[in-house]
Image (cartoon, rainbow, N blue to C red; front, side, top):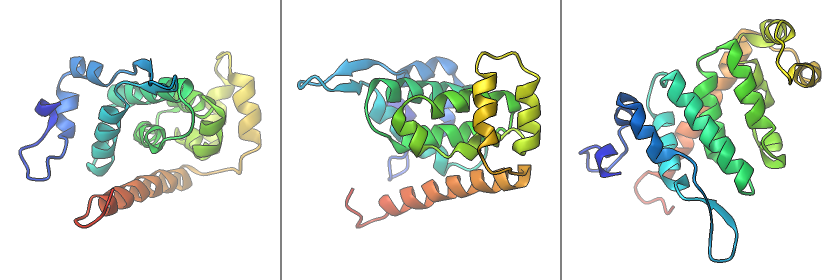
Amino acid sequence: MEAARTSDADDALDPAWWTEDPERWELLRFQAAHDEGGLPLDRWWKDRQDVLDALILAPGRLDHDFARFLLDQEMRFHRHCWGFSHTIEIAAVLLAEHRRPDDVWHLWWAITTSFDTWFGLPHRLLLAGGGTERTVSYITDSDHEQRDNLLGHLNGLEASTADSVTTLIAERRQYYTDTLRELNSPGTVR
């Protein structure tokens, strides 16, 4: 991944390098594997984590297709492996920032990927497409196979406005930005 590194002394990943050419995304595609003990892993999880960490630190919105791709890879990773990694939430936040109603299905699949993602991901991200009213309206008008399941779930969530969801997305981005900067500050053992 040397081509993705900046020339800065901190050797950070350059987010623009990834968005310039979608063929590069293949370097981040989930690849199922198992370690010597038979535990599941993803051959490229560390590279994808590095990219997601760099992207959440970069200002502005990520290319929508790349955001969807990254969330898809994280869902595959979390379906194959156990536990919860911050990377799936970062990918979900990067997608939610686009505020598109049709992304509710990707966010729903992310939340329902596993027991761990169900409890680890903020369910209010489902409302990124415009708050409760607009999201429920969009889902109600769809013929998606998960329509009834998702509507039932949303009925159990506290109603949210588009502004409150915008605040949630900004808070989650800021949380990861602050955490990663703290972890990467001089003198911090990682």
